[in-house]
Image (cartoon, rainbow, N blue to C red; front, side, top):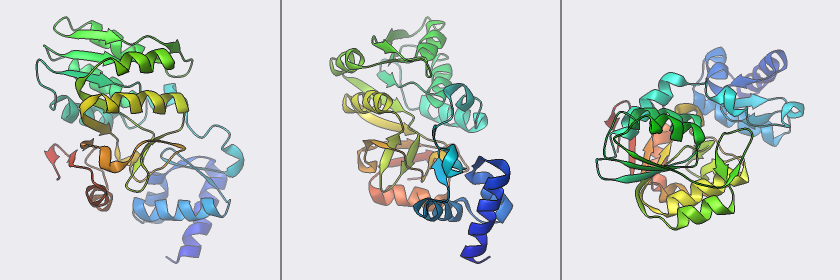
Length: 260
């Protein structure tokens, strides 16, 4: 299929459905997700659509580029649990870690609740609640300003408390992660907390399902070269994983095994 024909079909699909995922476009057009991502980037440059997390919307629908947190918690659940199992295996008894607030790190909190002997520091009210039911671990909830969308703490107090700690692992789940722009978020306060956590950890881990790979957003959390481990799922595009390794990601986990 010629590029112009793909672009026309993408715009037709978008006009009908108003919001579609990269996977839906790829299935409808019979092409790879990477091909669709390139098409969406070009169409966005021309002002014909707006890219959002995991897909695209018409330009007029881009007032809120990110779906609400309550919506995100129901997306890609098998992939998030796969990522959570892989990430939980990294941390050993006696170690400490940061968890930022998000639906993927919430899945990780559920996995860590099954372990013992950990110190877990988080700004997520939901993750702290899940972990509080695991008496074998020490759980610390960071102070700060409460936000209405994601139930978590943010702001200067949160960042200051992070800055007084040093942990073994930081697990963050950005809006998008690509080789050129690194880990990115849409909201400033979320990016600031994630950046602070990564800066105070010996090992920095990005959790990103396949829909987030190759995607960019507004605010950089860190460049790809600062990431020690990328944990993704078995649907991740091998070409994108190769690009991350070239960009300096030190280790990639997916499909239950090390890929790098």
